[in-house]
Image 1 (cartoon, rainbow, N blue to C red):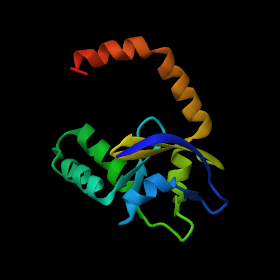
Image 2 (cartoon, rainbow, N blue to C red):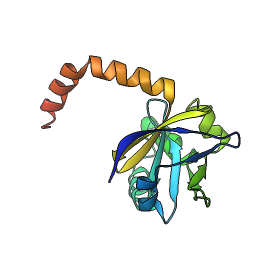
Image 3 (cartoon, helix red, strand yellow):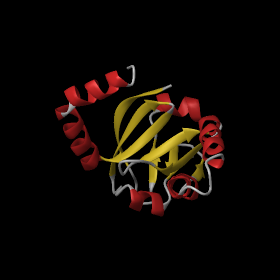
Amino acid sequence: MFIGEYNHTIDEKGRLALPAKMRGKLVDGAVVTRGLDGCLFVYTKEEWQKLADKLANLPLTNANSRAFSRLMLAGAMDVEFDKLGRILLPGYLREFAKLKNKAVVAGLYSRIEIWNDEAWKEYKTKTEANTEEITQNLAELGI
């Protein structure tokens, strides 16, 4: 399980060190892809396979299914760690998430999210301001 929020830097080559706590769960490598809300998603190979299987079973005749599959699958890249625990984020993914030199790495149970630090601050501020409404909506889902 991935949890926590960490501030990291991205070097000039696009390499990002993931927290040591998270790297231990990614020894077999990881998959990074376009996420939702303007961030990147990082999955273990096992979790990625589960998601990819679900996406492969979506109906091709549904435009939303095709669009979401393209977002997630076409943008995906296998990543490996270098000796310093860094992954190379491809340019198209850095551009998608507007990543420059500062990033927030957030653990969200079965995935990691990588955010532009300013976008993360804005998202958190907005979410924290709507906590009551969000809580009520989640209560309707049984949470």
